[in-house]
Length: 281
Length: 191
Image (cartoon, rainbow over all chains, first blue to last red; front, side):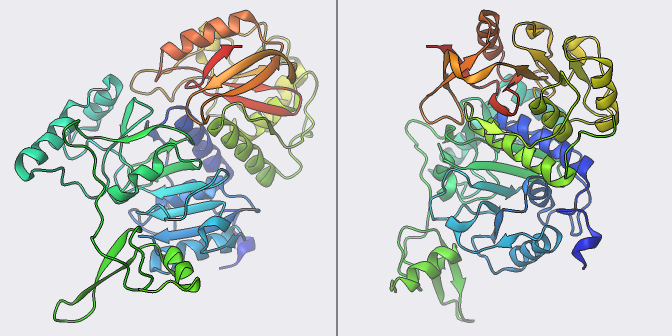
């Protein structure tokens, strides 16, 4: 692929302008889903086309891009998207969280605390938090308009009644700026507290569903719960088998045919950096 | 007419948008917009916003003091945006701080609050004048910003606008080359 045969960042200017206007309105109405046209991208819908379109509309020549997939910089989706933008936008890429100005992510927020000046871009498969409870989009739009979130609370209550606890482990619904219930994308519930009053900008793009939404910095993002059943972010009760971390989110890895399992950090950058500082299991 | 746009349309548009994104995400932060050379009396910052964000999908309303024949022709060439005479039809409105049609602008609907107008208000500067205390999303506790040239009517309207949330008009205050954003969520109080 030859860089010169593409416009900067792949998308045409008219498309970028439409996404940019949607992003500004999304920041002005934190947690509200703004429709956008959503173009074809050179990969299938459902593989991160929403995140890629947001990144393409936001990215500039001086950005440093990091792309993670489930916390890892070296998986197929992350490598492909990083290569795509280094080809069509010629930007510098990195795996180090603190070096990046723009971080496109599938399903994790880095363990390294984010700072002002950083922008997170989330790939969102399903932007509608109420979709399992109410199949009609016309109806969910109405429920959001009325701030009528009773069905979501009933769902969480039924979880407690049946299982003794809220069983959602990822895509755990949040209330943004006291108004909109929002799907934080399939990040583990463990990551939800990182969104609350974060110093960074968080932009969410759902390509197939044609929706964009956002959380500005220093905005209240509260995981839904009950007074007597407070929100408990879950993580494996273990230490990373590589770096020994007990505070990071861990992936469970099967390592042989007999079902032996190990836990390792899902954030590969965080894990590597701990090991270079001499931390071991 | 055919001149006076961005020197580098792709990268200058991106830079202008990024400045506006930063401004909207952090209300009260002063951002600089990339240079362009619009016909007077259109302020350069207003032109940068028009070039970066407006096209045939964004009906524009211009204050009579900006809407000279030359400006309208320049806009038609660079943005192709329809010019509307009723502010209620505009997705972007450009006005001077003392003559803005505040209550006429559309705040969107309950189901589609994003279909609201963005009001670009030309003020004198961010060095002296009324000191505004801003709080809300994007602001860690509160921030103070002096704005020169804002009317009493603006503050009254902001309070009404805030009460409409999630509907509401979003504001960009501009000087010749700089901008700050006051999205609908920002609580604006005079100190």
